Image 1 (cartoon, rainbow, N blue to C red):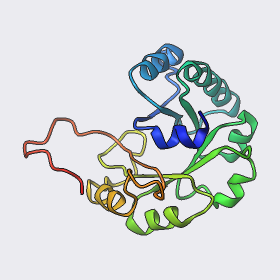
Image 2: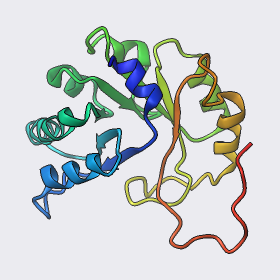
Image 3: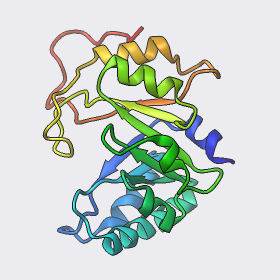
Image 4: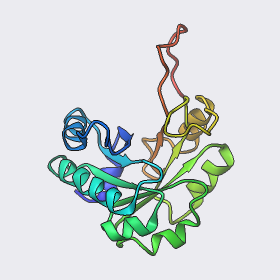
Length: 189
């Protein structure tokens, strides 16, 4: 199955550090993929390039039996060296067209969005294959970002319905609620 089809079918996108303290990245990711994770992004700021490449290779080995996708965080240069199938850019990581030049022809490129205007721009950008909205809740991987809550998720669901083939795929990212909300669960329309 091709990368674009795998992206469209993906439902669970995991961001994790390289688990250096635990020393269990391979077994952790094998369990995550067995549990249904479709995409994994190694997201650890200030990681040395060689250490990041080593972690990405461990992720690739764990992902292969599941046809899961390994995503490089922020660095087009690292993505090019790794021959990554997916690169994810934040808002401050430069133009998508420039990043695309580092990638192989079938590679996927995504963009983080934190506001409606940014989501609209990502949806219109022909170099962006998917986008993420969030962080929905506070997260340790983005401590400087104010959580956007569910409003941006609802906006993305309206503008890019997941069932519409013409819509760009997207994911809600960022943390989880420490406990289920007391109010009833609501549909996102």
